[in-house]
Length: 342
Image (cartoon, rainbow, N blue to C red; front, side, top):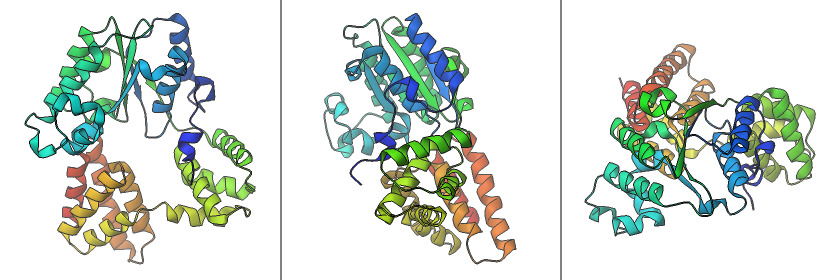
């Protein structure tokens, strides 16, 4: 695959965003008013929050928006920790080393330094700069209070856009400092139109039942739909893409580490399960919700009896519930493995 289609078809302007018309219209009005407040974009994963933030920055600053727009992923900071920090070259000057073992400061101390330094930098040929923080629910309470103080300190020259799938995890003072905009997955008809547009642009022979199969699998998730269609296009090598080809491609989307995790959990091998969880989070970059969803799919399609499958699904459902309020998805996944081993 030369280009990842989720990036290739990421819109550069708000007019290209599919769905979420009310939130997108509000963002347009804010741009026109030239009085942008802090924003809190919330809603399920892959609903266009990040794409909308990048598109908004592009419309405010133009093609050179990177000069006044900075992106951070909170989950990288607080789930991968120092291993991530040394990999990001932006932080080398601040921490003074690329060896995580030589970092004496805590992750939260480094986070405060990084955000404070970027927020304190003046904008270039603009009234303000934007710092976009994705997965803000990964911040613990101390980090959120620190962020709130930084937002207050530099409000004259810096705007923050926070994106989260779990707004209830954000402290009230942080939520109250931003205009909250809700994002959700797109409707079936809008997703179908977009998939047909991409298929035509790529010169693919996509049947109607193929479009329906993508819609059934993606359930309004444009990123998942694009990923599935791209896998199918590679697999079919120019041949017609129908429902069967889409089904075969959905099987390719499943990480081998998911299978390793499921096998380890059901065989009560805790060490192997923890290794698989590390691989899924750090190597595959999957969220806890994505891991649970694929585990559920494996469980449902297994050859076990209905009672066993029902027990597994109940445990996964409990983990899903706990994960919505948890600060660390890894802990909840390891807890799920432990319950499998009971």
